[in-house]
Length: 157
Image (cartoon, rainbow, N blue to C red; front, side, top):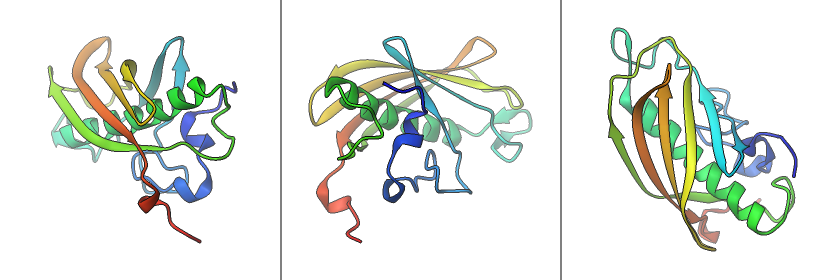
């Protein structure tokens, strides 16, 4: 297994996501990694990710949870298949459901940490629970039901 970010292992034709696509220069460029049996990502919100002055927009937090969750699901699927993430055929997941609970205001100007834990792992569905913290304070918790990407979403070149 390599130490590249999960998202950097996606093939180019599956790397355009606004939240995590390496081929989307306007996006968040979120990078997720293994952290023992959990997953981890860090992200520093930009000044324009503002809800009210000094605090991060909740939609950004939901977006980060979403992308860290689907990336974590793909990583787990590759781990279970005993394959490196940059091998073909690609295994990608999309969001079947997203639930976010905001627990504390998220301060602007600090790095956010996302920790993912696996609640359920099946071949076509993986549930990832994610905790978002800033300065050691839990700001949000989310759950992503990630489902294996259907063939109908694959763009034929």
